[in-house]
Amino acid sequence: MHRSHYDVGIIGSGIAGAALATALTRQGFTVALLDRRPGLLDTARGDHIQPGVQPLLERWGVLESLMLAGAEKRYGTRWLDGEGNHIVTIPVPDHPECPPYFLFLNHEQIGEVLLSRATQAGARSVTNVSHWSIERGNGHWTVNWKQAEDIGEFDCTLLVGADGTASSVRRTLKMDIERHRYQYPIAVLYGQLRDVPERRTLDVFVTADRIVSMIPRTGGESKLGLPIASEELPFWRDQPEDVLRSRLAQWCPQLEFEHVSFGDIYPPVSQQSKTYTGQGAAVLIGDARHAMHPARSMGMNTCFRVAGQLAECLNILSSGFSESEVLPVLSTFEASFSRTLAPQIAENHAAGLQMDTLSGGGFPQLLAQLRAAAKSPKVLQSMALRAAGVES
Ligand SMILES: Cc1cc2nc3c(=O)[nH]c(=O)nc-3n(C[C@H](O)[C@H](O)[C@H](O)COP(=O)(O)OP(=O)(O)OC[C@H]3O[C@@H](n4cnc5c(N)ncnc54)[C@H](O)[C@@H]3O)c2cc1C
Image (cartoon, rainbow, N blue to C red; front, side):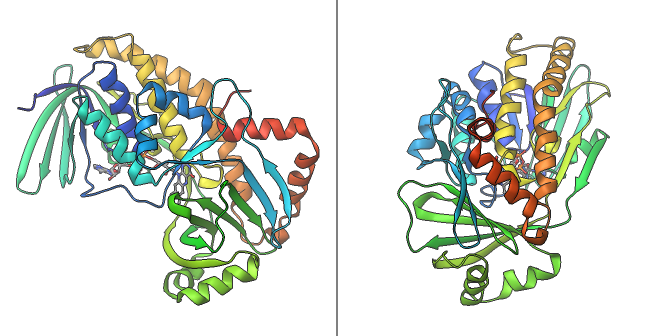
């Protein structure tokens, strides 16, 4: 029997929504999630969990489940030139509060681990929703939904929009947004190298023509990410494997693949939603609030942090809280977001702008920065802490 009132209703059960539901159910709150997707999350997205985020996942009781689901360890980030010459390795820092490695697991599996933990702890999750609407009641929201032939309804005191970059919750609640669309879409390809090293690293090749990122996937696979011009899309999407392989070999001759195939294309965007100022308690989290360029692998990790911050702020309340009790908590959350996360998002945008180029004329500025970093232990340490998501 489903209850009809929940403390928190979350629209969108991607990483941000599922992470928040995991955290809140552990704190004793009642949670309902709605999502329009019929199946698993898209695989071609964030799949590397920063060392600095892992203690949070451990507190939520999901770190071990991620390992059981097949998560693997990744060590530093190597920057190489087109010939495969090593420029610099950003190591994983030695830090007392987190492990000396990143974890990686396919995005959809991370989502499944979180969602099943939340539902085991009592959250209600409805997927494949074809339509939903929200209405204000007296001190709560009423959410109506339709799923195939089924219809349903629940009330919630706090409404959370976690429905991704094109958030319908944001549109419905008329929340303003600041947005920058980057010029070059990112093509994602999947491949398997002939020789997969045992100790896996994320490798970024700064070639004369393109920056190509080789991101480890579980089972020895790799995800390749590279900016392309829109008119190149038919090439990457439609050409046979040997043609894709030889194009990649032109840029990075030392990369030899067993197989490689086109995955998808994403138009990166940097956007930040403004705070909700209308009637009732509502907040956006995840990409709905802070979508960012994938250049620094921060999007999913920021989803975890924001879900953690919101859950921590809500922890002063108990299940059954009222709208008037939760409103000041949302103000606290907004203040902590502006203080700690907004600067990181601004920094990510600066990195996104730097990577938003095709040939970049051989990327002389970036190469000079990387070579200078290689010679400075202090700069390297600060880059390592930032990449790991650890405060210096
Ligand atoms: C190519 C690429 C590579 C990336 N690489 C990294 C990386 O290496 N590291 C990293 O940390 N991050 C990375 N990211 C970013 C990361 O994947 C995202 O920040 C993260 O997945 C956002 O999660 P979310 O839950 O906020 O949104 P989403 O994953 O978009 O989930 C939103 C959910 O809401 C649902 N939904 C949407 N609209 C509606 C609606 N109207 N009604 C109901 N449900 C709805 C969707 O079905 C979905 O399940 C990458 C992103 C891309 C595109």
